[in-house]
Image (cartoon, rainbow, N blue to C red; front, top):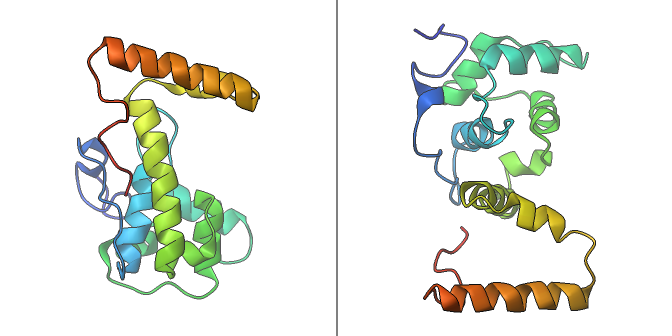
Amino acid sequence: MAIADDRPEAGAAEQEQPVPVPGPGAPFADRLNFLFDRVRATGAREFSNQHVARTISAYGEESVTGAWIGKLRKGEGRPTITLVPLLARFFGVEAAYFVEDEVTQKVATQFELLRKIKENGIEQIFLRSMGVSAAGQRKVLAALDAVRQEEGLPPEPEEELP
């Protein structure tokens, strides 16, 4: 069983489906929970509220508890103006992510792309393409197009990013 100030709900870390992408006008809690769901090491559980609180408090700018992080995740409180950039720092996003729909969408799209790269097992293709010239990239794309055609797949993936 989860400790009340450790997780928003019992079993939250075991969810099969990812937390939905926050839409326009999404509340702070939805935006925060999206980051908890997406920012983690491959195969690792989401960070606990306590861990986030301890790390943010260690920055030395504001003291926060795991219970308070839990309340924010449930939509039961409003973060202080000093806490928002500290949460952004922890999760590696701009503070504007929490309040500006355009920034939220940009960040969500980046996380969704990373999720799809991992989900489809193509990290090595992605990583090996880094540093390849534009001409080399065109050759790789042509080779991928040929493989897609051989396997009866459409030229472009059907899934769209958010």
